[in-house]
Image (tube, rainbow, N blue to C red; front, side):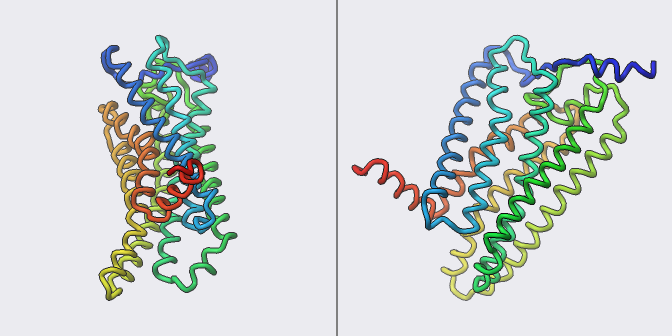
Length: 313
């Protein structure tokens, strides 16, 4: 009996992604919604990266971070959306064991990297507003590269730990994952292993990842607000706040969805799926819109790029 878990674990060759529990008639509608959202993600994030790379005026730390944010959003949504759309038309809705491992690993890597990158962007805004005269010195190209590389490294380390911990569990019961992609909590629900240590490690990892990034963001904005309130002219205060509002909007959407998902009890899996939708598809779709609609430099760069492509404009 003691060998039962590992034996059954080794026999698992695939899983079934249950997805959304709706009538089959709604699968076409869900497919079209996913397709539209994913098309907007591709258009918005590829467009944002193209604008940043082609316009010399956007060769600044803020847009270097923003370009990487678009890359991350594009990549982790591409890990989730195509497979979810295929499953709307598939009878089996299966995903191979290796495919499930790869999906969890890549998604965890990029979602964690995004959290650290948003903290780096908050620090960038702190230096820009609180120490503008030293901005070009403190936010050097080397430091920016190190911050971005560190974000990816933290994502990679976290993903290796989370993925290895999840797939060392024994799956000797159902293969049906009650989600639209492979994630740690749904996989834990179908495991027959003792989850006490696994959940402690998951909680510890989440705390190590989320708390430092939130602390950096909160402290940065406390200093920013304090500095902005000392500006005498209302126009100056408005301009300073406008440089931060886009970043705050992105942070609020991402962390709001993450907290909602992790604090949703396991007995409400459908609510967890809705929250997951927010940060797997809705956030990557909104980020380019938030930054382009509220950013004069991006709008001017986009106009310049369109005029170059089509001189009639």
